[in-house]
Length: 394
Ligand code: HEC
Image (cartoon, rainbow, N blue to C red; front, side, top):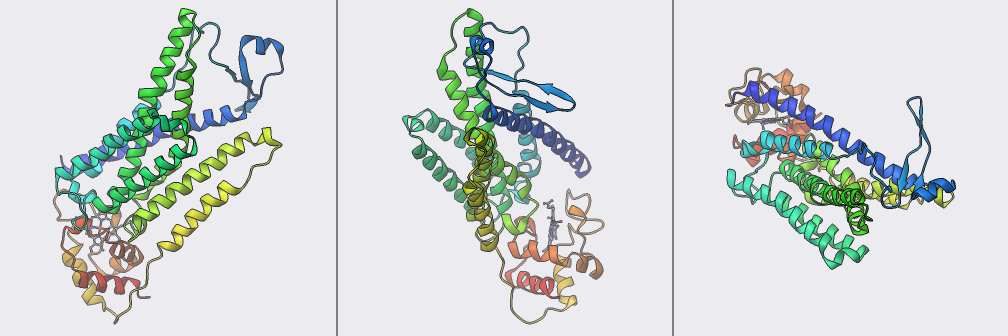
């Protein structure tokens, strides 16, 4: 496929992914908010109908009064709304992006010769192994007796995820590792919807339609998975935008950064959940979870700070010569690199003025090792150090 068509396909898929992702996460945030704000009804008629919680809200000029039934309504309403296409289409468009950006040409963004994953499509197979294997391990864990063990289960899950983050960063390019970690978590979230929550709801609906009581185990399982999804959300969103920040994804301690940032995101989400519930505890939310989340992120910021390189000044001619042989094949007005239609992100180094204008970006990309992608043009360590000294000089 020509670079022109690939560009369009990539932009339109990304757009669609963003739209359906917002629809999914928006609905998911709303229902978590709703569930945690419900108050027991005072109206006897509501209680008799089996309503366990209700609330009043005003939005867009209208007043709303959602009610949650203990297990289900006595009879099925004629029109019952379901929420699953948002999740499924987010996964489908996300997987399409993964193929377009990382799998079609794995040497470009997924792999790094300095990392352990095998070259070419064997590396893609390892990546797919994480996505499928992640779900199998997580689902097995949720079905094991450990799932009833409260914090023990959470600790084991957190430990396994941290191990996966380290393994991914050891195997793949920093950018590839971050996105695969997000894809793995995102797949667990969507599979939770497709394989556990929705089938359980279908059984509940069928039971009510038959006039039987729904099985509470289906409700509990659905709730467990939807709680997990809530905590996965912020870490997943972080990985989805991380690919724009090579200084972070390609940092020396990128695996630790990924773990700390993901834990920070989950802690902040926990604070929001507590805040939703706070009304029932006289309106106070302990700031502990928020403080923990922010501290983890702040610690990562300090940890990743790159050292300034020492050494003799590098003159413009030497820098330009390195850029010319190692970068300009892609970063020029008319790139010569096969499949590159235009300068990536508009970054061009085919003249001193253009290169100077992008100095700080060059410094980040070169220091982290993110550029050249997969070191396709063979930038040597000496050249890297020289280019970095030039780019960091004021
Ligand atoms: C094989 C093609 C290729 C080569 C060679 C290459 N780059 Fe890039 N570069 C890319 C692509 C693709 C992107 C866009 C990455 C993205 O969208 O995340 C990029 C992005 C960048 C950016 C912009 C980052 C931003 O945030 O806007 C900088 C700066 C950069 N490269 C520097 C370099 C330097 C310096 C070299 C040489 C040492 C180099 N690149 C070599 C393909 C290349």
